[in-house]
Image (tube, rainbow, N blue to C red; front, side):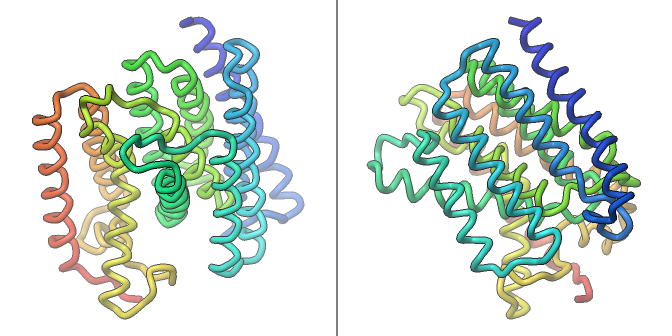
Length: 328
C-alpha cells in the first residue's frame, strides 16, 4: 500500500514539475498565456499532474470508474473555461453557467452530499452551492504568490489525513494525487513566483477540492457534528470570501465585483511584510484544517464546543480586520 501511494505521489509530482518547465518555455516563446510578464501555465500543469496521478491510481487500485470520470471530466471543463477567462475575462453570468454545468456533471457521476436528513433534492442543492462556492472562493484567494497553492496544500493534507483515519482509499488516493500536483506547482509559485496558476488553475483547484471533500465519509451517523468537518478544513477560503463579501457590501459594491478588501491585503496594510502576511494566512489555514480533522475524531459535545470556538474566533477576526481600510 505504502509503495503504491509513493508511486502515485511521484507520478503526479514529477509530471507537474516537467509540465511547468515545458509549458513555461512555450508560454514565454508564444506569449499566449502571460500575465504581468509571468506565464499563466500553473493551472494546466497542475491539472495534467493530477490527471496523471489519478489515472495511475486507477490502474493500481481500480477505483470506481464512474466517479473518477465525473471528477476528471468536470474539473477539466473548469480548467478549459478558466483558460478562456485568462485570455478574455468572461461575464459573471457566463462563469456561473459553466460552473453549474460542471457541478451538474459531478452530481450525475454520483459525487454529491449524502446527508440523510434532508432528501435527494436538498442534497443536490447543497452540492451545487458547495461546489460553486468553494470554486469561486479559491478564485478570489489567488491574489498573492503562493497563497492559493499553499492553502490548498494544507487543505489537501487535511483531507488525506481524514481519509486515512477512516480507511477511505478512494478519497485518500485522490487527495494524495492532488497534494503532489499542488506541491509541484508551488515549487514555482512561492515568492517570487515564476509561474501563476491563473483563473484556469484557481477554478480547477477549488473545484477538485470541493469534489474530494464530497467523497469523504467523515464519521459514523451518531457523530453528526462531523458534517461540519469539510467546512472547517476549507475554512480559510470560506472565511476570506465571507470577509470580502461583507467588506464590499459595506462599500455598496456587489460581492462579485473586484476590490482590494482581501484579508491578506489588509494584513499588508496593517504593516506586515509579504512573507509575514503569507505565513499568517497559512497559520489560519492550519488552525481551520486541524480543527476540521479533529472534528471527525471527537464526540458530538466536544465537537460542538470546537465549532463554536472557531466561529467566535472568526467573528473576532472579521471585526478586528474590518477596522483596516485598503484604498480601492
